[in-house]
Amino acid sequence: MGLELYLDLMSQPCRAVYIFAKKNNIPFQLRTIDLLKGQHYTDDFAQVNPLRKVPALKDGDFVLAESGGAGGDLVNEGGSWEGALAHAGSLAVGPCISHFSL
Ligand SMILES: N[C@@H](CCC(=O)N[C@@H](CS)C(=O)NCC(=O)O)C(=O)O
Image (cartoon, rainbow, N blue to C red; front, side, top):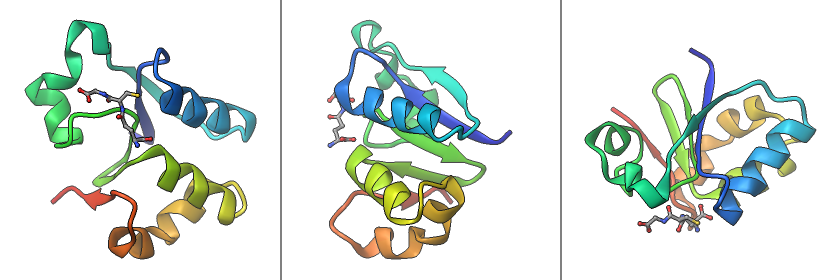
């Protein structure tokens, strides 16, 4: 399936994640979650992010929410999504919100 980004481009943190991924040529599937239509309250989206907020990043069973954590980690790791995955353990215990879906 590859990397999926759940975004509503009306949202500033979503735009930050979107622009970062685009600028760094990180391939992803855009999954638009229309906040004004309440799509973040659907059961389907709650399976992705129980916090029911965007942005959310999903890669297989790995899910990361919180744009600051995701974006900062992507930058720290040299701008790669793989770097973020490799660093996910420290995010999970850090102040940023992150979780693994079980
Ligand atoms: N600090 C979070 C903010 C996430 C957040 O609050 N997202 C908003 C859109 S900007 C949202 O999903 N709001 C829906 C809601 O709270 O019901 C981040 O940067 O990822």
